Image (tube, rainbow, N blue to C red):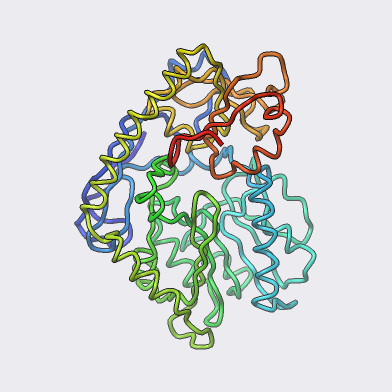
Length: 414
């Protein structure tokens, strides 16, 4: 069951929430079916988003039990070459930028399959720790120097970690800071566990791109919060943390990498970029509710265009497959009601292959099917942010006349 959020904002606890987008009832993004006969037991839940006019953060209006979402998780970052390369570069930056030494305490929250932390394994740390609740994913981390804690991070968990390992020089949390309705508790735990001179670095998708570029596929129950830099700053400052640097990164259709530390730490110079980005968000009206209502209209208009376009292709007798059975795909498939145009799905994760998509029940195959007689004419890239990687992996399909289509942020063949 989903729980209804209180009228208070998750970030600032102000009672100033305004719902601006309702995507209807959908099955949970990660609730893949391993047997088509389980359809009758499948549940769907309301998916809608609200804007807080106080702290300027967007958030879903109902949330799912975290144990259901993450204890048996289907997302494995190292399976995606683009992400594996991204986190290898990030780990090298950490080593170079912060001069990590043997006495360094390092913690990664939401370490997934070790895609980042394993790159640090060759360096000597006092403690190198990853925490993640998904045992089915973390079991693949098999390096002696890395200690894994299978649990959700919280203030209570931070006290246990501190008792055993002390406070930390570096804390990382990539693509997890948007995933919990208990973010105040989590941030308080991070602030408590971080040394006064320590750095807390995290990556999170940029709400500016979602709102201004029609990236509504980023909205699903697993993503509880949708940040601008303004709302990130409003969250951190409540727990005596400040942003001293920020970097735009291309992952997930456009994200932030935020560098923060304790307010009392004056050893790190604050970048001029922060003020410029905050001013840009103001100029783009990302602090005003009217912008989010316009996003609503744009999303429903795009839904209509997508249906019309795919119907024309299907009426021509073309076989269409979808590529990337992610949460993003499941939002588009269910909200736009386009599974009737899709013959099957493709995904590079062995965890998903052989299963059926939540809510739309399309069978998931490996990309090897693109080289068989029953290959599709067109592949719809739901994983559009990884288009280059997918094209390079499937050059033979393209050489033999296959075509790749994206429908977000705009409809076009690539």
